[in-house]
Image (cartoon, rainbow, N blue to C red; front, top):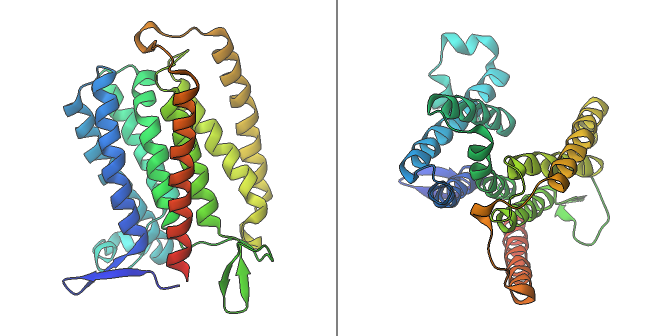
Length: 273
């Protein structure tokens, strides 16, 4: 599949980078809104968004360069800028997490409240990034498989994109009904961990690492139990207490979710045709 989405001023704009840029824009808008709502300050959250974006891009790019060139790249750091190395998503996310911890410490923010404000935006950004990925799953004969010549592969980017968007929808709906500080952040970790566990069987054979599977499972089970325990023992915080709109609000949220999921699915299959 062609990775170049279009050319701007003679330079290629790659699909994955474009989707990350779009995701950063929308996730930043949500982050500013949540920061103001939680009293963290819109300007402060904007600073975090800029720093987190830079941390992701630099970390993902440098790690990709180290994978390609080894430690010899340290003597020629300009290779990161002049070669099409791509972005290593896991390394980028790790750099964002590290930056977030340092940012919260420097600004003396309550870490659990700060992470709750960030969690929905992270899920939305992950959904955009997943849809732009070119890493497909194992061979399958399912009717929704992506066809490349004689190969029929699981649409892994679509699975992950819909999964992340589902997590975002749950977090966004729950953000005004907090029972304990850190509920959204811990819920994000739990949901994403289980999502990766469930998707391991549809990955390429060489990516089905038993160590990774058991590591994710060991992380998912106790954190899930912890989340349920804290949620069951907590009470709705007065700051986020709202009058329920009942079944109408629920139906509206479900319809919005279905429409967005349909658009995501349609756009994905249009780009792989």
